[in-house]
Image (cartoon, rainbow over all chains, first blue to last red; front, side, top):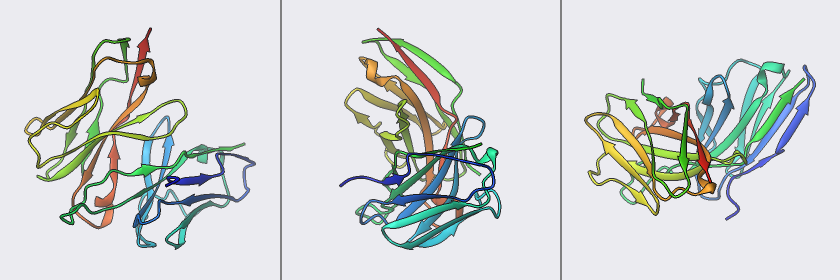
Amino acid sequence: DAGVIQSPRHEVTEMGQEVTLRCKPISGHDYLFWYRQTMMRGLELLIYFNNNVPIDDSGMPEDRFSAKMPNASFSTLKIQPSEPRDSAVYFCASSEYRDRAGRAYYGYTFGSGTRLTVV
Amino acid sequence: AQTVTQSQPEMSVQEAETVTLSCTYDTSESDYYLFWYKQPPSRQMILVIRQEAYKQQNATENRFSVNFQKAAKSFSLKISDSQLGDAAMYFCAYRSTLYGGSQGNLIFGKGTKLSVKP
């Protein structure tokens, strides 16, 4: 398995531009998470999906952020318009949520992250 | 709401020595999962070890082991025979066993930066 695949690895954009980050989760994982990492705030959850359905988007900073998961193998996080304070590393992670007894067990597998710089 | 606290922003260890990273958490739940993740300069988040709260036995993965003290809500990571490749940020994380809402979230501490001296 190739793991969780994120693209691009680095993105530099100008303020006001639209940015789209992409994620391919591990096949068979039914949960997908988007996290943002900054020095000030650490790792914070933005949104997560279960079976392609958004479950909790309370971490999405504002309406400029949107996320979609059109199918089990692809998700996007879009920022429009982007601002310098959006500069961060954005991680996608996927998870199986059940062990043999049906209990939540497995840790998440993270992608390599996208370093976004908005100038 | 659950919180995770890592009180050591930075730690240093001599190669081949042992180091312990601290983590405490706050929760009202009785069943949950705890994790340690490693983030090297490559920024990849790598799962190091995990512990189920219902298990009394401390988890062990090769040179990595935990000291899980449920009553004290403490979950420390011990790295034995430290190697240069262990240098990284280490994050402690908590996850509820409950489903739905924010309970599916991995809650992270702020991290401990570990340096390994040759």
